[in-house]
Length: 356
Image 1 (cartoon, rainbow, N blue to C red):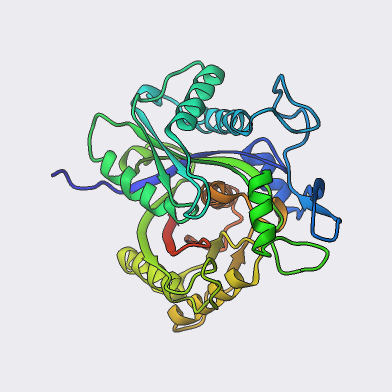
Image 2 (cartoon, one colour):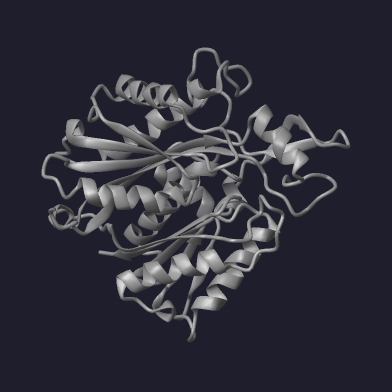
């Protein structure tokens, strides 16, 4: 079997409530701009719920009315098509036909991404971009932590010279009647009676993965993926248990050990924390279990949910897009970036990226 090559994130694409491109979204998030507005959904007291929707008309869908479309997948497919087009068009000489798509689907407990929806998203991209991706595409049903499995799969795919690049993407929305109803039943939403919940949002985000050796010939800085970690949390939010951060700490340790980087050399952490106390506590407990010395000056924990809301499976590629943009614009506090990923189910993930 061929050795797995070092891989790097070389470009990104983003469509979310605060921007229809990576540059616009990252600038808005850095400037602490959000687009939270009252939705047509109401809580148990009849008060409108806040949401982070992409503005009406922005997607230029023919059946769009007041920001909504008939058929949620048509909206998600359009979002993905725009984000993927932005991502791929940034790379000169990219062989799109030799670029494999790995799409992140929702975590356990939410409706899975069906094969038909995956094909619909590919068709939407090809209609917008005018180019055809590799015929084989894969969906990973795991929410944000699925990003680590996707990157491990990308590393395997890129060991073959027949694959030029891997497009890892997520397109998701929590602004759905079924999702809202279930989240209300589980008391997970930010409502007039609960300040400890999340604001539902929607987004599509993509990260293009290539071999680091090919990336070295390019001028633009990239993020080299040097460590991956996957684990399971025994005490989950779905089971209504208190977080202890055991599973996330294990995933972080694996990523750091593979990278050969100690926790006290991590300059920044990017997290998919949804806004619920469970996940803030988990991130804190997990980092306390791992860290054994002072963090570097300027160390930060970055949580874009405070600007874009909970965007489900789109959050992990969005975090990579923001980290890449920070590296390219000289905003990173240092070269070592840890991305840690969680969900209401058991899977946990972490990756260590180095600006190069």
